Length: 356
Image (cartoon, rainbow, N blue to C red):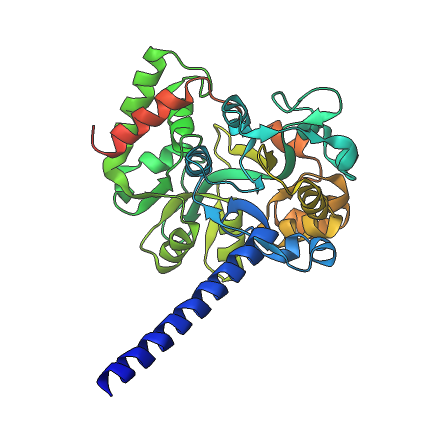
């Protein structure tokens, strides 16, 4: 009898295992049928791709990364998304590693609606009628501060070096953000620095390190700490200012005299994707005016297309401090382009953060 019960249990266990294996295989197969879009946290909602689900009811998978360097490391190590969402200053690096395939602009139906300042960026061109990168979103990096806790600050990045607020400030843990600002304050070209310049930047970063509560790309926690008062100032992107103002938190997004940083991010098609047609459908859906309008209204970021701006009320753009033409913004900000010494700068930044 005992042997019979053991045999019965074994059969049940094997049956359950077989069922679980079948379910897993089915899930993997279903996931394999979906486009994989590797992106920043917050860009996953299908509302940003209004036409895609109509063509592809299965939807898409959207694993996220913390910053461009994190994304690059994972893709280089063997992760295989179909589309990724890095920023422009990293495109040459991705391309140099052979990770990308060209995108045909003739298949991007709103290509001509993309602002020329973005459409004609260096490092985009991949031959006649082809590009490596389709710009989609752009915005600014600056200091978001509590107006009730930081009284009448000088409009300068130097606020993040103010000892009066030691332990109550945060900065972005990314090479193309905090070290760029340290370079600006040190009188060094951020995108083409020699060893002497890098030494000055390192010294400026070491000066800042003991004043910081954290280095992070987790804007949700930064926003929560600004709202609670645990932080009084932090380097953030536009979306944090929009989110906290909607909550009634007294904050201001600074316009530093040295210039805010302006960035543009977008889509690249990975070299080994088998879902090329779906990738074009996805990119086209994200360039629809309603997708760009949602990006503007929800996050306060700029869309890359003039048609998206045309679908947003003028008064809403004024509230978000977004000009309808990015050329206007770029005249007073620092555009974050490729860094010639990005690898060396990244190693130096890691050393400084570790106390070196």
